[in-house]
Length: 568
Image (cartoon, rainbow, N blue to C red; front, side, top):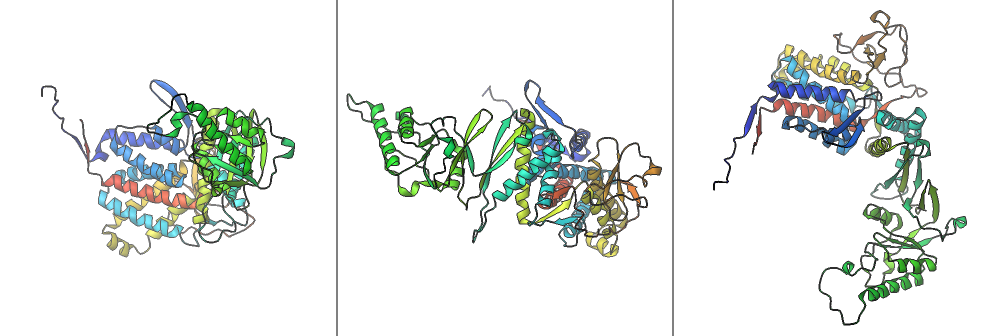
């Protein structure tokens, strides 16, 4: 009993948002994430204090898991944002910056937490209701008859990750490949319930980005194909194949657990090899041309298979097993002690050998109804390649979200400023009814609306990192950035395009700086000129959910009264 240590009492923190240490860390986190935001965001290098791998990124999905905090309050916010990113792949920085800005604005306004939460929920309802309207001024319908807007959406995501270090032509090339891969995974002419296919990504370090390519079907490593005639391109239409999930190395341990009775003088290795050769005899009789194993194949078995003109692939690995099953219709064979049933065989339309640098790969062409493709991603070094691979996978997921809701939102900060102007104007209509419903005074309503709109505008302003000025025109409420050397007197004379690229500046256009007081106005819709297309688009589904997550997480943080931490 003398070795037992008395339990320490739990640490209780009252009103965490009044704690200076927590507030300082929230401010630093917001500044850190703001500096990563957008195509000109600053990169972050993350490593532990004893060395190890250095992480270079500006993506929330990579950066946030690498940031650790001893405060459960900060981890609560971080976990909420990461949950959004895991489900929607985009707008993680938007959600985090908006959430932290809402918390800061609520604290600075002096509103009670209950009033701030009710106002935030009310204003969130105004935003989501407006965004879901057909005549929403910051929403663009996606036409799947044309790939233009899909490529723009993909390019907007890829270009917003500066750690990829892509030129304009490289970003466009990867964007087109992302759209091509997405379209290849959408089944055609499938009645009933549709299941999307899969894109397998293979990375190649040290090759130019423009060498990246998409292939329908599956590419697998095939280093030993010296006996195959490339001139014929292996076009054996159709080509029967068999897939083994069991090891064919001939080891006794692979037979499973249990007790074995071995007679004196019996060579167990030879017995197992004979069993394997019986399998070879069957696949030869069944005219199999492609023999694939998840694990290792005995060298003698390989030699016998190749002597009969059968292509052998071993060590396929677990990740590709499901994909190959979908592609070929084969059923993995898990034992070598029974004959292979006819239904276990699959088919490949044809094969082709591809040499990529020093690696040799076998291209398995899919049947017409298949929706499997392979993306080869190339980049100059490991850091850039790692970031590009993550971004490509996120982009493909965002493109899939367009099938659920074929819309996009204007990018470049224009949606944020447009929403801010709409909320300011809409919240001032029917004020008596709003005050009665929310149970607050007009002063509290004005404070809540001002904080909410400034938070939206601060997200748009976070896109500028070079000392420029962020403005909004007072007609359509689009976002504009002017270089730092443009004085206030010459703002109206500075021409250019808005953040999304739909509007071109003109001398008589009136603009106002963000986060300043201006008279509420109703943003006028732009004329739908089909010849003018937006240059920057955001995912509608991802941003709508990010907006909801940001407000709900901020409300949750404002509602926390105590933090109780077990110190044992």
